[in-house]
Length: 128
Image (cartoon, rainbow, N blue to C red):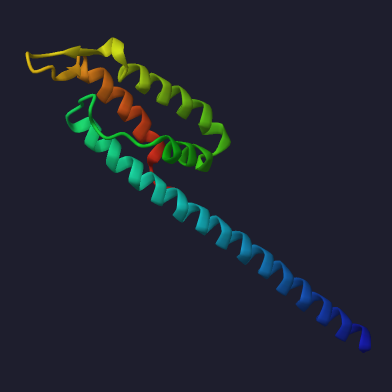
């Protein structure tokens, strides 16, 4: 009889420990997802505003926000994100800008290229 008490006690402790570890792991995942979605929301708003009417003077996410967002991405998505960001920076660069009028306003030669590159970046900001 005493052996069955020990088995019951051991199985209860093991089940409780497993439940504690699984619950902790799920809570950590939920917290990471909340942080990712908060960063993604900020970057999405800025990118959507830049896509609506692309101008070189538009607000752009700062380097720290982009770096933090990149680090929150899964490791298998980072290389594609880096490539999309590089293409977007090239599309927003000096090769695609022109002085449009006598006041010196600067605009993009090809706004569709910039909008397409921003669309590629927006694919990474989808909620988890």
